[in-house]
Image (cartoon, rainbow over all chains, first blue to last red; front, side, top):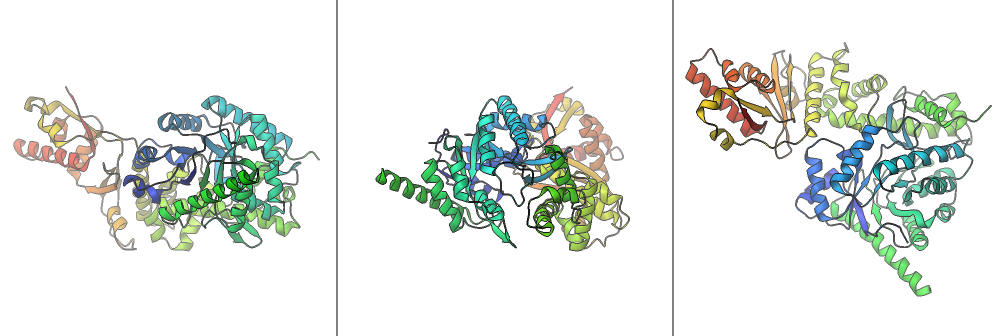
Length: 280
Length: 261
């Protein structure tokens, strides 16, 4: 059972969907938006987000907190995030368990951390600092990765669980990212799932990916593929009903198709929970 | 040898993927830090990140400077982006600021026509007004309500989502024209603003309008705006200045009718 409310099956709100927000046809259980896109002084995006909030709950999902970075946390960034939280009252706030900047320079990417004791301590302390500053628990998302480090001393799922425990934060579990990284690094996605502390999982992400040679790339430009749906069903079996969101960032389909994908997640969740009830 | 610290890992990672964008600059020390079957496999994995870094930021610049990107051929644009990122990497959590110095960067390149650098300045002004602070716009009825004796001391405020720029080329024509930089130099003043419906607009200004808008943004009163028409008969000057103010209000660049001193 998640420690957060079950909002149902939402979609990532992107610019192409704004007309649906304006004419109030953007029907979804909830919306997730990229925090940084709204850390602005004014303009249309903020007006759209006001309107989206009238249609469904909104969740803020950041990409540039740089929680795993070794630069000091950017206070200007946190101040903007606090302003957004105050204005839009999101159901929760999340970012990624990764790093993205060093020496004051931003890669605008979700770069993998070495899974070491040093990184656990470093990241957990920074998450605690952010949570103290924001006055709320945040969720950290596992990222897709294309490389791992020779200095890593534990599997990623152990790292994720250790950070979440030491920081006392929630987990945004990205099922597609687990699958992509499992293929890229040759681990068992089921083993990953079994290592995730169920009580900390507050949200699930689903998305599609692409192939590049022997590697899978987290491109968010395809429907959720069958192996990811299979893993999602297993996640529902383990974690129960958790707010789930379909991300689609490139070659974005119509809003109706996006919602259909979210509804598919709802059906899978229902089937699994129903089967679990019957077998119990 | 002690294991690399988190900071050292990140420094080597950055050096390998971002210091020379679009070029292979993988640090051997970083290769040793990456797991893989062999060095070729390790480098392939690192290149996913270096390619993504360059391509992602190139796309951002291409979206923020669509006309500049269209007027350079693809190869030229790629080269410009690679050199620009090397000199001006992103320094803000939001990628929206990435293009902050592109116009200046282009201005200093001898292989780039000056008109293209000015076009970049126009496109960046459009980016800046897109998310500038909101403001309540004045209406014509606000003007009507001002008693005649207060007009000379009337001060108006422009909206924050307004930028002005001066160029040596008619960059608005290049912006809206076909894929060509083949225009003659002609001193041009432009205003760029976000309309109340969110559209980003720009318009050329004549000498008088440009001078009047500069006085307005400097906080000078209506009497000073009238001075820009001083070569005309007094009555005509006042009418022209009033018509100009009315046009600004209709365009939505006047925030409010300000204090009457």
